[in-house]
Length: 147
Image (cartoon, rainbow, N blue to C red):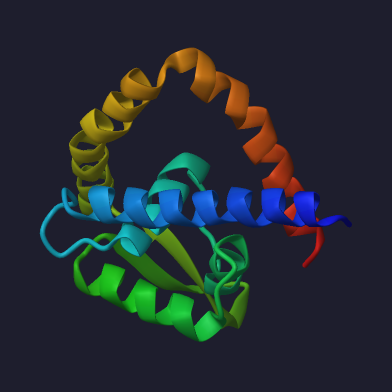
């Protein structure tokens, strides 16, 4: 790899990391009281899947340790946003589902963050955003294959 390619790669990933940090900060600022971005991510995933998940499945989905996911799920359960129950077929496992309060909290968070993210798309331009999505998707796939 030549130095020009190295510079391109470093600049590209620096921009991605900076955008990630700034996007998270801007979105986290408008989340409902007590909700963290990690909480929203889990609630959003559960709302979209519509199925119960084990903590281990959620940990794999979010590329977290089981301990980190257990901590997040404990906070979500305390807030009343998820239900955690034993798996009746395997007593060693637990199953997690989103509660009605969790759906409302997720919807409130989405309503709060939507003006921020749509405003950014408007400022940057839909065509530019649409053009970069395939590149970002390919990067995500390449990075997930490396695990």
